Amino acid sequence: MSSITLIGTGNMARTIGTLAVAGGNTVEVMGRDQSKADDLAKALGGGATTGKRGAVPAGDIVITALLYDGVVPVVAEYGDALAGKVIVDISNPFNPTFDGLAHSEQTSIAQQVAKVAPASASVVKAFNTTAAARVRRHEQRWRFEPVPFGAEMHVERHDIAASSAAAGRRRSTERARPVDPVTGPLARATLLMFQAGVADLILAVHHLACPPASAQRWLTRLRLASTGGDDRRG
Ligand SMILES: NC(=O)c1ccc[n+]([C@@H]2O[C@H](COP(=O)([O-])OP(=O)(O)OC[C@H]3O[C@@H](n4cnc5c(N)ncnc54)[C@H](OP(=O)(O)O)[C@@H]3O)[C@@H](O)[C@H]2O)c1
Image 1 (cartoon, rainbow, N blue to C red):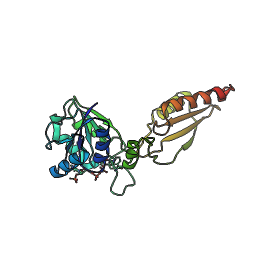
Image 2 (cartoon, rainbow, N blue to C red):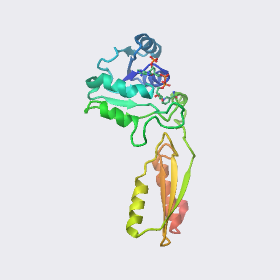
Image 3 (cartoon, helix red, strand yellow):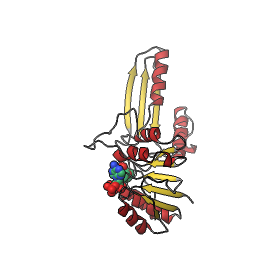
Image 4 (tube, rainbow, N blue to C red):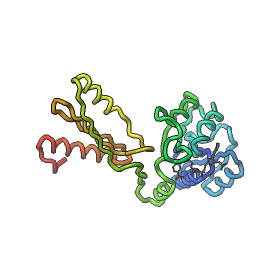
């Protein structure tokens, strides 16, 4: 079992804390409002304790269950108190109108947390696309379902009139293009149509949309289908 400190006393702190206690983990709650932290620890039960804001967390795993604009300042405020900890950032950095990110696409809150966290800490991104209601369903032993963001499958076609060297670069760029689980889509098919009559189909699917084992089966069947093999065994 693990020792977990929740920084934050809201909806997600309560949801994750409930699961953590049910799983037999040691839980500590910290918050900027000590009375809210005390109340939550009491409500969680299972020996959950409270810690003072800014002190060294008792948990080896520290979950920042805070609104995104509080995450980086709070991690910076704790500073060396987080040395050696696994910091789990669960925030969704939405802009004020909830139609885009609060930061540029070149970064993420988790990357910004890693910049201000002690070098010996590890930063993990988790839960952000999984609504509290879904997490609670897991508590009831239901399937843990992600919340899909954006279109289910995004399909793009690009006609590339280019030399083979430039085509190779285009392929590499497309292969390296990440799938963002917050802004979606979680699945993307890109068809690169090259002048020489050659086409590349590049599929990028986040594991939230398709677990790796299913993706492997899918790729095997696709490969067999494309080479005229028997795709029923894939
Ligand atoms: N709710 C969901 O379904 C869900 C699912 C996945 C991820 N998330 C993410 O989880 C995070 C927490 O969500 P939530 O639903 O638990 O929100 P919440 O119920 O509003 O709780 C937010 C917590 O953050 C604290 N806080 C806010 N601003 C702060 C700051 N500047 N400095 C220190 N503490 C601050 C609040 O403290 P006070 O009580 O003192 O104000 C409260 O304890 C968010 O980033 C959200 O995007 C939410």
